[in-house]
Length: 155
Image 1: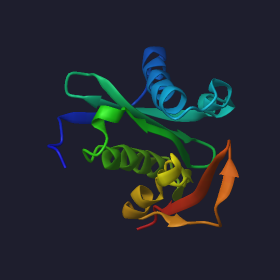
Image 2: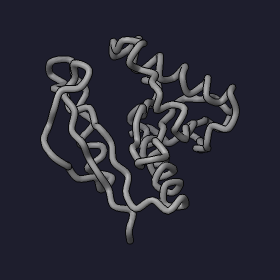
Image 3: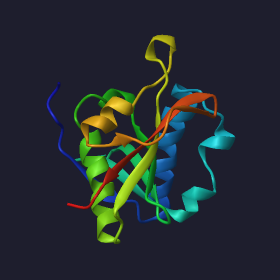
Image 4: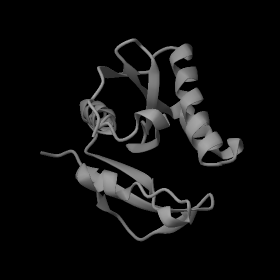
């Protein structure tokens, strides 16, 4: 693993921050992974708290959201040149801390679980290393295999 760059994670508070989140999502989910723009953004965006991962120079390189009503983590994306540096863990921890501060007891996600040998993305191992466990079986969503995963925030 390369050296972890200076970084910080914070809640996206302004319309400019939200636009930075959307730009990262567009780059990762639409241009890189081929999702349709009509399904990448949805009504959950307005009901979510969005987070930005920033380098020390304030360059936005990652984003994630949590739906406030149900603790669902989603739209987790880091720009390709910054993957594999260990930056995902602090992003997810920021979500856990936020949900816990709001009285939440768990966080769950619909992890991509595609076959990487066939061009899919399988993020289940990442979530498992953070303490998430499978909930239910795999299913298809938006043309991609997914697996619901959950972590308890109760110590």
